[in-house]
Image (cartoon, rainbow, N blue to C red; front, side):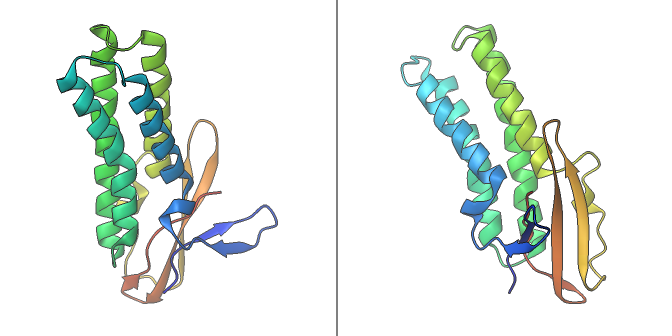
Length: 168
Protein backbone atom coordinates (compact mmCIF):
# COMPACT_ATOMS: atom_id res chain seq x y z
CA UNK A 1 0.00 0.00 0.00
CA UNK A 2 1.37 3.39 -0.93
CA UNK A 3 1.51 5.62 2.13
CA UNK A 4 2.02 8.98 0.49
CA UNK A 5 3.92 10.91 -2.11
CA UNK A 6 5.77 14.18 -2.12
CA UNK A 7 7.36 16.03 -4.97
CA UNK A 8 10.99 16.96 -4.66
CA UNK A 9 12.37 20.05 -6.37
CA UNK A 10 13.48 17.79 -9.24
CA UNK A 11 9.83 16.98 -9.90
CA UNK A 12 10.33 13.36 -8.82
CA UNK A 13 8.05 11.82 -6.28
CA UNK A 14 9.18 10.05 -3.16
CA UNK A 15 7.09 8.07 -0.73
CA UNK A 16 6.45 9.33 2.75
CA UNK A 17 6.67 6.13 4.71
CA UNK A 18 5.86 7.42 8.20
CA UNK A 19 4.03 10.24 9.87
CA UNK A 20 7.32 11.49 11.32
CA UNK A 21 8.21 12.71 7.81
CA UNK A 22 5.16 14.99 7.56
CA UNK A 23 6.07 18.66 7.90
CA UNK A 24 2.74 19.45 9.58
CA UNK A 25 3.46 16.81 12.23
CA UNK A 26 6.99 18.17 12.80
CA UNK A 27 5.72 21.74 13.12
CA UNK A 28 3.00 20.75 15.58
CA UNK A 29 5.43 18.70 17.72
CA UNK A 30 7.76 21.72 17.78
CA UNK A 31 4.91 23.94 18.95
CA UNK A 32 4.00 21.46 21.69
CA UNK A 33 7.56 21.47 22.96
CA UNK A 34 7.73 25.28 22.93
CA UNK A 35 4.46 25.50 24.87
CA UNK A 36 5.61 22.99 27.48
CA UNK A 37 8.82 24.95 27.99
CA UNK A 38 6.98 28.26 28.19
CA UNK A 39 4.55 26.97 30.82
CA UNK A 40 6.96 24.91 32.94
CA UNK A 41 6.79 27.37 35.87
CA UNK A 42 3.10 28.26 35.52
CA UNK A 43 1.16 27.80 38.77
CA UNK A 44 -2.30 27.95 37.14
CA UNK A 45 -2.42 24.19 36.80
CA UNK A 46 -5.91 23.99 35.30
CA UNK A 47 -5.38 26.23 32.29
CA UNK A 48 -1.74 25.15 31.91
CA UNK A 49 -2.75 21.49 31.72
CA UNK A 50 -5.56 22.25 29.27
CA UNK A 51 -3.21 24.23 27.00
CA UNK A 52 -0.64 21.44 27.11
CA UNK A 53 -3.26 18.78 26.35
CA UNK A 54 -4.54 20.77 23.36
CA UNK A 55 -1.02 21.32 22.07
CA UNK A 56 -0.15 17.62 22.32
CA UNK A 57 -3.47 16.64 20.75
CA UNK A 58 -2.59 18.19 17.39
CA UNK A 59 0.44 16.04 16.44
CA UNK A 60 -1.06 13.04 18.24
CA UNK A 61 -4.17 13.11 16.05
CA UNK A 62 -2.10 13.57 12.89
CA UNK A 63 -0.04 10.51 13.87
CA UNK A 64 -3.03 8.42 14.90
CA UNK A 65 -4.89 9.22 11.70
CA UNK A 66 -1.86 8.42 9.58
CA UNK A 67 -1.61 5.00 11.21
CA UNK A 68 -5.26 4.19 10.45
CA UNK A 69 -6.14 1.90 7.59
CA UNK A 70 -8.51 4.13 5.67
CA UNK A 71 -8.53 7.60 4.19
CA UNK A 72 -11.89 8.26 5.82
CA UNK A 73 -10.42 7.73 9.29
CA UNK A 74 -7.28 9.70 8.44
CA UNK A 75 -9.32 12.64 7.24
CA UNK A 76 -11.46 12.45 10.39
CA UNK A 77 -8.33 12.66 12.56
CA UNK A 78 -7.02 15.60 10.51
CA UNK A 79 -10.30 17.38 11.26
CA UNK A 80 -9.84 16.60 14.96
CA UNK A 81 -6.26 17.95 14.82
CA UNK A 82 -7.54 21.14 13.18
CA UNK A 83 -10.17 21.47 15.90
CA UNK A 84 -7.48 21.07 18.53
CA UNK A 85 -5.57 23.94 16.87
CA UNK A 86 -8.64 26.14 17.32
CA UNK A 87 -9.01 25.02 20.92
CA UNK A 88 -5.34 25.77 21.60
CA UNK A 89 -5.60 29.17 19.93
CA UNK A 90 -8.56 30.09 22.16
CA UNK A 91 -6.69 29.04 25.28
CA UNK A 92 -3.66 31.08 24.21
CA UNK A 93 -5.83 34.20 23.88
CA UNK A 94 -7.16 33.60 27.40
CA UNK A 95 -3.69 32.86 28.81
CA UNK A 96 -2.37 36.14 27.40
CA UNK A 97 -5.29 38.15 28.78
CA UNK A 98 -4.89 36.80 32.30
CA UNK A 99 -1.11 37.07 32.25
CA UNK A 100 -0.06 33.42 32.17
CA UNK A 101 2.04 34.12 29.09
CA UNK A 102 3.07 37.39 27.48
CA UNK A 103 0.98 38.78 24.66
CA UNK A 104 4.02 38.62 22.35
CA UNK A 105 4.60 34.93 23.11
CA UNK A 106 0.89 34.24 22.74
CA UNK A 107 0.82 35.94 19.33
CA UNK A 108 3.86 33.91 18.24
CA UNK A 109 2.12 30.66 19.23
CA UNK A 110 -1.19 31.75 17.70
CA UNK A 111 0.56 32.47 14.39
CA UNK A 112 2.00 28.95 14.41
CA UNK A 113 -1.40 27.39 15.16
CA UNK A 114 -2.86 29.25 12.17
CA UNK A 115 -0.05 27.95 9.96
CA UNK A 116 -0.66 24.39 11.18
CA UNK A 117 -4.41 24.72 10.53
CA UNK A 118 -3.68 25.96 7.02
CA UNK A 119 -1.31 23.05 6.47
CA UNK A 120 -4.01 20.59 7.52
CA UNK A 121 -6.66 21.96 5.15
CA UNK A 122 -6.96 24.83 2.75
CA UNK A 123 -9.97 27.12 2.77
CA UNK A 124 -13.04 25.17 1.73
CA UNK A 125 -11.77 21.82 3.07
CA UNK A 126 -11.02 20.21 -0.30
CA UNK A 127 -10.66 16.78 1.30
CA UNK A 128 -14.42 16.79 1.86
CA UNK A 129 -14.94 17.52 -1.82
CA UNK A 130 -12.92 14.76 -3.46
CA UNK A 131 -14.67 12.01 -5.38
CA UNK A 132 -13.93 8.62 -3.86
CA UNK A 133 -15.09 6.84 -7.01
CA UNK A 134 -12.27 8.29 -9.11
CA UNK A 135 -9.38 5.97 -9.95
CA UNK A 136 -5.84 7.30 -10.33
CA UNK A 137 -4.39 10.30 -8.60
CA UNK A 138 -6.24 13.21 -7.07
CA UNK A 139 -4.27 16.43 -6.56
CA UNK A 140 -5.41 18.88 -3.91
CA UNK A 141 -3.54 22.20 -3.68
CA UNK A 142 -3.13 23.48 -0.13
CA UNK A 143 -1.89 26.98 0.57
CA UNK A 144 -0.50 28.73 3.62
CA UNK A 145 0.69 32.32 3.89
CA UNK A 146 4.34 31.22 3.81
CA UNK A 147 4.32 28.23 1.41
CA UNK A 148 2.23 25.95 -0.79
CA UNK A 149 2.07 22.23 -1.21
CA UNK A 150 0.00 19.64 -3.00
CA UNK A 151 -1.78 16.76 -1.36
CA UNK A 152 -1.83 13.56 -3.38
CA UNK A 153 -4.41 10.86 -2.96
CA UNK A 154 -3.52 7.65 -4.73
CA UNK A 155 -6.08 4.96 -5.29
CA UNK A 156 -5.43 1.24 -5.25
CA UNK A 157 -8.95 0.40 -6.35
CA UNK A 158 -11.61 2.70 -7.78
CA UNK A 159 -13.34 2.92 -4.39
CA UNK A 160 -10.52 2.73 -1.81
CA UNK A 161 -7.95 5.46 -1.31
CA UNK A 162 -4.58 4.94 0.30
CA UNK A 163 -3.61 7.15 3.28
CA UNK A 164 -3.18 10.82 2.54
CA UNK A 165 0.11 12.63 2.95
CA UNK A 166 2.27 15.01 1.08
CA UNK A 167 3.99 18.28 1.62
CA UNK A 168 6.32 20.20 -0.66
